[in-house]
Length: 261
Image (cartoon, rainbow, N blue to C red; front, side, top):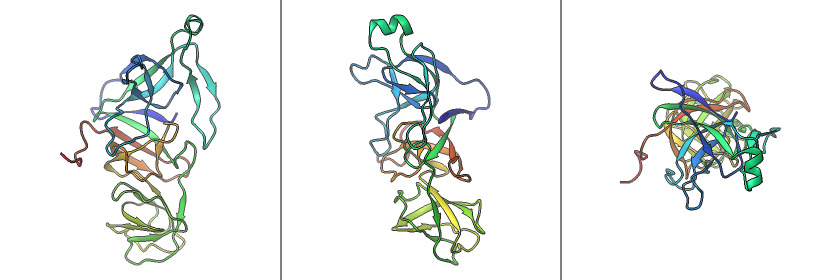
């Protein structure tokens, strides 16, 4: 499952689960929005990729955690394409309704500021691991990594640099800037960044940050400029294992505190 319920911040109670009609094809593990546009009939749909800085036009309602109608089928996942798995297709005819029932999904609600959500981090598409960066230079101040490739220029302080191998293995730092293939942090690593050390970056940062979705809405897009994003609070970021990177977050309640007033 791409996104999943990971508990809550009040330490008690069960997740709140509701059933909704859906007007689109949906998979278990996708984030869900309410389709409030005219003509949508109040059905839910997969959450959108953010289209605005501090996305506020497409609010996330919850996580699709089950298919509860007769249209449910299992589609084998394909790395780099989509999560797939258990799927529903919406009913379009009276015959569909009579034989399968109205298309319904089970949604575990996300209560902003309370519900914890676990999401896997991918390189734009589900199943694509974040690229590993091999450091080309030795930098004694512990603040600069020069990679073999040019990473996405993540907005300042919206990304994390993690050391996978070398003296700083297991240590995270927020990214201050990326220029061509040079990645700079403000708070230095405790040890020299040596040529040959490996790193990985993701467009997630502990604390208040931004989140955008993969192209199929079933994972966190970790290779993103962060010019458009949902405002979230990251409680945990784990970039240790290639292809299994993940984060635990809660949706931020209310407007982004850094937004202009």
